[in-house]
Length: 158
Image (cartoon, rainbow, N blue to C red; front, side, top):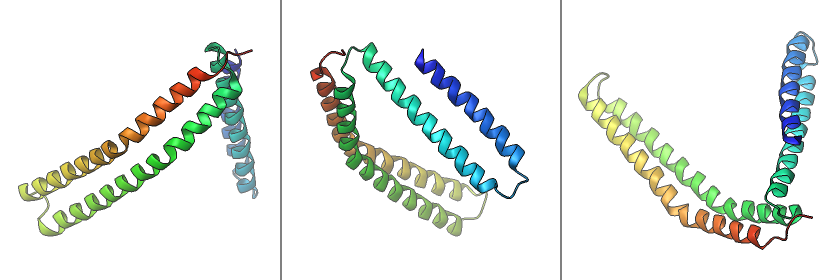
């Protein structure tokens, strides 16, 4: 029930923020109005997320504080592999962009050579990103396993 009220809160707030933003658009304080609206929205989202987690923990009959500690440990655990994945895929995208520029500078538009070159570059980009994911998958899997063990060790909700 609380979750529905949070969703309603988000919907109503979003509508009001949009309406208010449109009404205030002509005013000189649009920037401060938008900043205030964004702050209110973030507060609403945070409150709804907390309410959702409390509700889910209750449905699962898990102590909320313990579950929160497990979620925090999980977020800490995935931070490094997430960063590694982002760095790796960014390098893949940079390499792909360079290869595509090389294709365009080497071959004329509309030619089969250009299409073949771009296809090869795209395939290399796909393989690069797949390798990035494969390299961090064991760490993500371990984090997930640790989270599951942590949650199972939590006492029942009171």
